[in-house]
Picture 1 (spheres, each protein chain N blue to C red):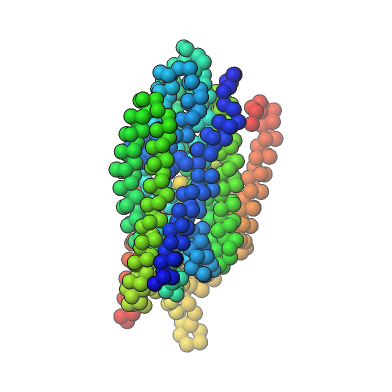
Picture 2: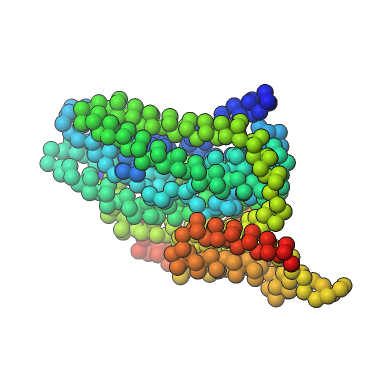
Length: 254
Length: 271
């Protein structure tokens, strides 16, 4: 089991990366699309890792933190789902079997940090601010952040070390209809994510562009990059036309 | 415009880098307040070095409720610093103005920012990344990170710069130029086109139902495709869009889909 121990340590390190690189402005490393690829590289199957990442990312595409509503913990879901698929050579869709419940579970642990620990740290910061102690105010942020860096990686690494052998047995007993049903679900669930995004950014004026994108893909087989490129052209056209019309009255510095 | 600005290059970049950590000490009580006070702390120390009372007040102000999109936050930070500088120099400056500007701006900025950055830019990046990743290409995660983070870098930089330069004038010039409306309109065009494309490419339902008999049997799905490609995808998207409009919780829809799919597959094994 030496091998599993080393793997768990490497996965621990990998799970610390997203928070750390975010501090220098590189965001989204903790999204399934990226972290699953990193896990794939650690476990020696980069390609499967990348494909698991895409499958899990599609499930949670519409999900992100807005205001006080926090999403499931995608980092732990993606890592454990991917690790399971690679280690037990399961089909890629089955990454979702583990990812969804794990993410919901680890979110509960995050909630403890957000409702209790960070609130207490905040009231400490209030005290130091009243005393004018700037260094201590800054320290409170670092203190809270260091919890954030290590808490989930520890949970994930422990889960990998103790859980994988046990999970393999459980999953081996999963009947075919369950994994088949799950496969169909993974095809449908992305629709929820797309609908969430559309609900957020769609207006009466822009709704037709959603259909334009759909038609370009369905009838012209254009790739997403092609569609995004065409979108940029349309936007540029609109801006140039607008500027020409407004050139006479336009007096701002932008 | 602020004259006599005390914000040197080093302090500018410190604000910039610190703003990246906005979400890392999040809490339910006042959300991003710990991080926000951390971002401003060093600048506040410098701005109010001659006035202890105002310095403490500024440190405490930083710990007020804060909720804003991290990538847009430098705009508010810039405005905040500019107003703090004015407050330090000007004795008749009304301190409560800083608080009220902060509170009144964060809502609209978070609204625009959330639909622009995680709502649109991330979707465009994910759409490109996923199409490579599904084929197992390393370009997937790489493109995803680049398409999201390179624009984010510029958005952070220019919003900090504009916010600081314009200070309180910012609100007036925002209203005059409605630049934010134009930006979010343009971004949503590209975003929605990408979403539309992904509706066709990423949603699938290969029903194992055959229609016809013998050699003429064809899967049901291909009949739909003959009418118009992507009809099933569009219908599934439409259903979800409708359900979300009816205020169904997303997790509930997700578990309902899982339940229905697994349930139906189970039933089909019985026959």
